[in-house]
Length: 285
Ligand code: SF4
Image (cartoon, rainbow, N blue to C red; front, side, top):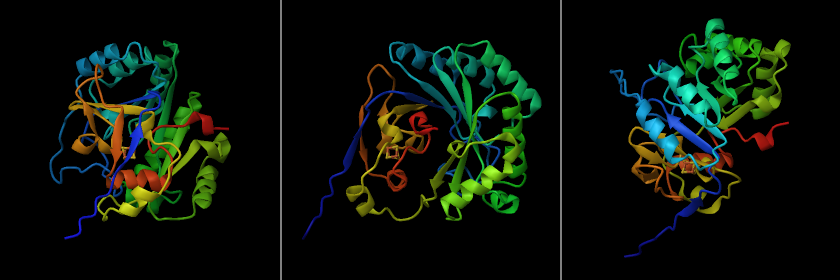
């Protein structure tokens, strides 16, 4: 019998720039077709991370020069202690809120600017918008998601924030066309093309393509520049939170700096060649 053994590639943490915090594992007010999270079909699970877990993690990381903290989810702004956690994180680093934008209106944007002004660090945003056409966007995300995202982005700009627009190219259109048409939606707000970050869509349920993982090269991966803190421990990246293949340890006193690149999600990252969740400011112009 012939047994083929494939050796996984290994990604090493090169620099701990990004700390992702999973505010909730499965609680979201939208249900996007391309989401990497497996949502419960009929029940809403309110599984928020405790503030004390974040406080302990930040104290373990007090000597680590984290550059950015990303509040992720499911939807991070549903967390009941969201404001307190935001203030806590701003003491350590700049904070990026990764959101669908549905909780941001004028009052919230004004409040967030006040919170930012009280801190030495900045708040920025990753807002999801998947298409320039309302019907196509809402078909992927949620009815009303398009208007909510645009409303949020406009109010954030009004209060002098920098929103990054995160597009999952679900319909497999040309990236340049998507970028150009989304820029047009905000023509009076001077959104730069570099603020629009496009990820190629890859079906998480499709059969893994071993060839991709074993032969393709990548430029930068999230697991090379950070880790995610969840209520269950530390994982390599948001894709692999809760997945034993991405487990790195239970706390930041001692955690894995190397991770085998072996999952369908890794295949998505490698196909994109770049990080999927963090913003690489070196690439901005
Ligand atoms: S899913 Fe991507 S970022 Fe996560 S471990 Fe795999 S290659 Fe790294």
